[in-house]
Amino acid sequence: RCNPIYISPGHHINMQQSVDVIKNCIRGYRIPEPTRQAHLLVNKIRVEHSDKTNPQYNLFD
Image 1 (spheres, rainbow, N blue to C red):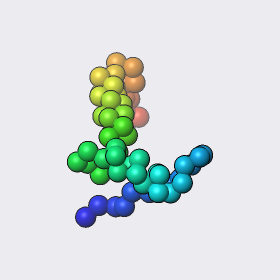
Image 2: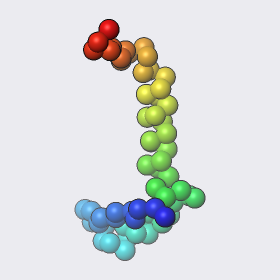
Image 3: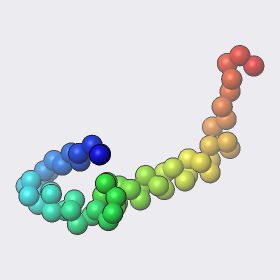
Image 4: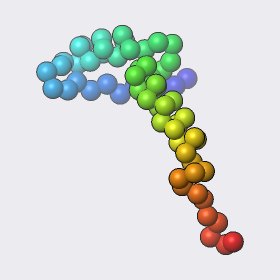
């Protein structure tokens, strides 16, 4: 079981058009493919740069 997707109409698009856009963007995953790809890219960048640009410090060292 997964949580439902929240779909909201926007500027010059009604609810049915919003649902149609989301249905056309879902490719085997719960979230739309553009959102999923953005999430994967950001996580990849975060992992690649985490140790270099944002070192973690222990408060008690």
